[in-house]
Amino acid sequence: MTRAAVVGHIEWVDFVPVTRLPRPGEVIHADGAFTRAAGGGGVAAGVLAELGAEVDFFTALGDDGQGQAAADQLAQRGVRMHVAWRPEATRRAMTLLQDGGERTIVTIGERLDPLGSDDLDWDRLHATDGVYVTAGDAGALTRARAAPVVVASPRARTALESSGSRLDALVFSSHDRDERVWAERSAARARLLVATEGPAGGRWWGTSEGRWNAAQPPGAAVDSYGCGDSFAAGFTYGLASGLSVQEAAALGARCGARCLTRAGAP
Image (cartoon, rainbow, N blue to C red; front, side, top):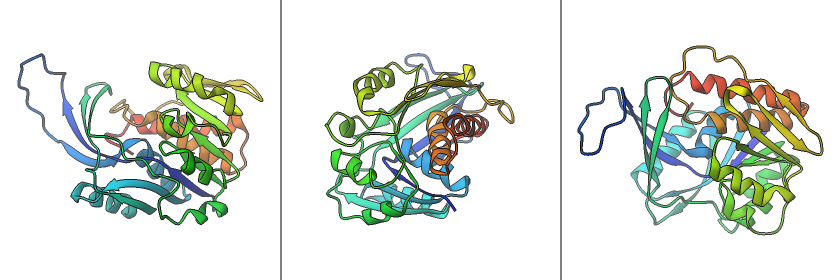
């Protein structure tokens, strides 16, 4: 069995289906709202567990009801949780889901990042095949480097802005301006840059280069929330399992396509 880990963040997210976004000052009604443990780290941990990996998740949460509920929800999905409990509130978000799969997100509160100095069972990373990093400080990234494969999101910018550990791959969306800018700043420390391009597939470059095709979704588009982190989770799992970059990207594409057909964090 592949052993994988996530070092990153969780958000407690209200998913609210709407037929359209409200106009300024308008009140609209929504049916079928639900809440999930999500955020980049939460999405990736869930996808890795679905792929059959043994998953350790190193994160930080507020010592409150939302934080406990998020940890419990992911644990029920087979993720081994390593939580640094903070006095600050767990970060929340509201995601409006429109017909056709588009999502609009409002985050509430500061993101809570795991720190390398947190008293967590970091030694488990020495026996891990691959790690995906979405948040943390330089110390957390150094801890992650104990694994033979380390993939990161440019949203882990606190860790990436400091000098130190190199990455095997930096995965980002070519359609997200912030991610492109942050990826450019950290490009020198990554062996591979991996850019997703939505329905056009994507490309990678660095120590090797190539393209992959988008996977056909197994159903209608429902919600694009988490598609990028689902891709990154599949890509990390592939590299950690010994697949080539091309094969890992194809697996990531299938994970992203499947995510598109399900409402809420997968």
